[in-house]
Image 1 (cartoon, rainbow, N blue to C red):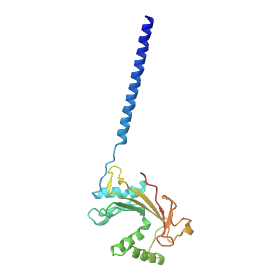
Image 2 (image 1 turned 90 degrees about the horizontal axis):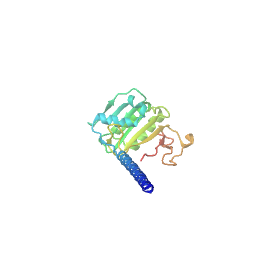
Image 3 (image 1 turned 90 degrees about the vertical axis):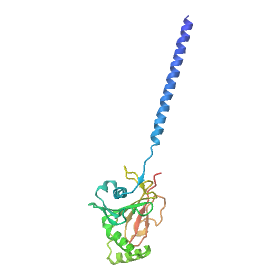
Length: 222
């Protein structure tokens, strides 16, 4: 009789352990499913199809803490070059051109506006890239063209897509590149190489000219 009772007790204990183990496994499977569900949540990108969307996406080119006060200029959805939004801080944002494929917006220190505006003016006159370079080079050397503050920056936000996330304003697959203008600087005066030593290493481009600048291309987020 005692042996029979002992067998019943052991059997019950084994069944209890088995159920507990199965319940735990079920819980783990459930957690895994929930985790996988979270991982599969996709960001929904939509076309940039209004001036408001264009401004929001283009402001991503500026440092986050400065976006509220940036002036925004560029082509609107109708194809006119206008001031899209007034601003009062140190940055001017040049919005993406909605008539061109992909996305390319930039923000630059306001002291660079004479240099940037002169380039736009010459381009509107039909001048080629090399012609614009030579004209601004001569004007900068003569003092006619103001090159802005030494070390003024340009921030570029660019990518192949023209769709964005309306909640975060991030453009699908877009990346950053940074430029620091040092007119007439050279590799010798800065200690920087004239070619990048790595994919995210700074280097000096157009050394010795009015357009000399440090190029910085951060590693891309995959």
